[in-house]
Length: 257
Length: 222
Image: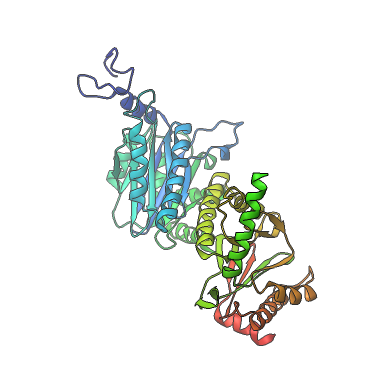
């Protein structure tokens, strides 16, 4: 893959003669090897989806790939699980620190910036390695926003995005099928179709996680296993109406208090 | 020894200070599956009524709230802080924070702040998986679990009413009536208490702050 550049890939603070930071590239490759994560934005809300690798004896709910960061922001990880958890802890602290200092919830953009400042430190400091993880961050303040973070500390805004092992074909598929005026249930159905892209075996509900930011409730909700099961069966038969009423029920569950 | 002297010195100053700022009555009451918090709306500085619409009940999490008495600034900063801490705690543990932990958190901050103590007293109430809980958290950091309790300058008056009619199997309506009539007695006899009431009912469905009409209904029934 990469030319053997003895020395230039040993320490991350060293540029190669071509101007590359090899450790950052390798971190990207670590993300490429991991199960995919998807984020899709619509005018009604954002849906985040994640695949996880589980085997027969594992307790699937012990792996969390979608995280609530604050009431209105959630994230899905792709890459090294430990690195992701460290980043998520940091993100939650940033969100609360913003609330303590300014008395209002952090915006999705500011949270992403703060997080990327932190990620960037690990490409320039000695004795450390970059984060082998990408986060897709979805949230709502005044408007809905969807960002991905890169191991280099860069971040990009997206309408719909996929990262991870089958991300190239999923991105191709999204480019063909994504419409800017989709409804949220349609996006959920599209997300499930994306998960199936290039996949031979059936989708297992235990190996899938979903999270939803809705414009109506202004909250991020992580879905339970039974809700994911329901969504999969509806999406299979393209029952958009049933999906819509299920999503409404999920929103109400969280905004009851 | 030095510590003890220091604490004595602090205690004396606190007493002097609290006499000036502690103009409030807040009431906490625990039932079988609910907690009730009641407070007046008057804020005072010595003999001056400085605010007539003070909020002394603060929602902390979805199912817990605290009443504040003492210095408003100290209380606001502390409640803001435990709100943030309990949010992170809840997200990391994937469950809502227990009321006892909230009280412990507050108690630790208050204790560790010595000798520059926070001049506040909290009633922390809420419902968690173990049921309803009510704690009195004092400015030195002590935590006591209570069935019914009062804080503030009007407390000697309110506690008499509360104690005479309290029982563990009160319904929410009966408890509301009892707590509000205890507060009404404090309002009529304590000059630092008044300007209306706030009532919060906490059940496992969440914190409900009573509306004007709901409060009026209780007052009419007393």
